[in-house]
Image (cartoon, rainbow, N blue to C red; front, side, top):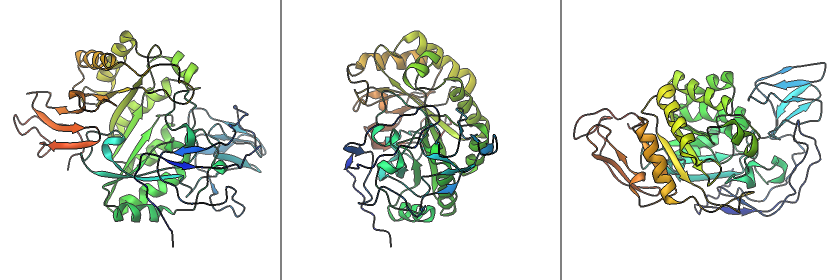
Length: 390
């Protein structure tokens, strides 16, 4: 029987001293283990090693690139690894010419969150979302809010096996309407997420993904039929920012956003606005214009206030005026639903009808104070409000 302790405080602390010397594909380094504040709740003490291969499964989306060499097809990096090497995400490993995942059934964070925390504002407002994550990420943002799990190797964080069917059962027990794959980057635990998504949908619950959008088309198409929604973090609208601060590329994220719309997956976008790095209003204007043209004016866009974290602790919090100006700029480009993040108590948290401007969902932080949408429409003027409401 699984003993699960759900701690609903914002963060709880892990400690691990297990290190690994297995090389990675391009980033042949790893961070020394230290005291770690996890984004959700601890699963209890467990050995950091996995001598019995409990968490190991053959990976999806890879191909042989030589006699014992493999190339990963899961994300745009396309890591090529030799036996014993791992990909950039640190959770997929070449074992004698076969690519395996090391994090199947290995969540390091589990929590019962409000859906607004993702944030998703057009998906079942006021509902709860059972949220899980494994260690690892396929990009390396200098400003990551959850670096203590996303930038760690799986063996650095204690974990116990949790089957996909158990995730669905726990979500039901906790009276959650959805399961969220979040905190780190869900793409890197694709096999586990896919099986969880199938079990969750079979239990008549929804699946939401909180992602950096760094995923190839084939795996996204495989996952899409099980998804209720996806929130994508658009880090900036320049390749320079992605190269300097994420070790990634902008274009694959834009491609993912366009594909999500083509696949009919409800999509929301978050931009963490960092002073001096991506707060230029000309850039934000171009971003908003691209979203309106390529994705449509009804895609919700959040401008979220930055707080110093990880490797960027020398910059101040984003001024409230910057967030307000970004919102005004995006609305001027034709976007109907523009929100302010990390600014509780402001009008930027509320949903308004784009036709008659009536308040439809009023929020304070992650708390929904009122919800007026009926039959996916504004009760005042009847204008259809896009989202997942019922």
